[in-house]
Length: 173
Image (cartoon, rainbow, N blue to C red; front, side, top):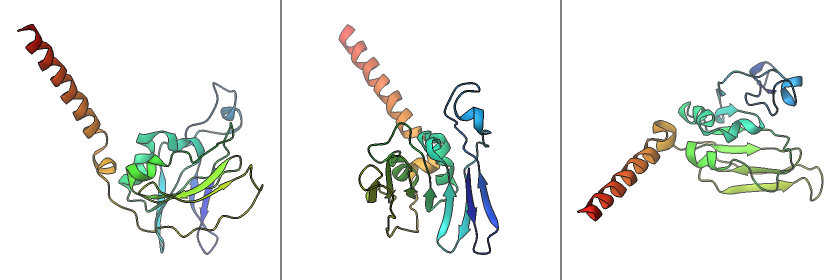
């Protein structure tokens, strides 16, 4: 669960994790209810902030919702199991043009800008708990992927198939 409160203490976002880890009633589905397939976001003085939880960011189409909503900052708290050894899912920042802040209880916490650069990193295995301070961009960037999706990748697949087909036809004649 992810709650985002405003300066008056009112709940602005109540987000439940969408992609639970486990099968049937084993694992997280035993303890948690699956959330809606909607990335929630709000406008505030720091830009549009979107929220997700943990593993939800590993699904590109799901994360793309934040890009379509014009998110500037994505907050993604996580408990990594097994323990993460490096930044996870930071490619979503490049695809969707937002800054990602991912505090992690069991692994590497990090902040990455919309260009995929890691701005700060803190590993729970080296030094235990702590506070990570980082200045982040509060304005996202518009990306082709967030607006158009996978069309460019599929176009390349079609072009490659066409080139292979042309080469095979030329080889026969």
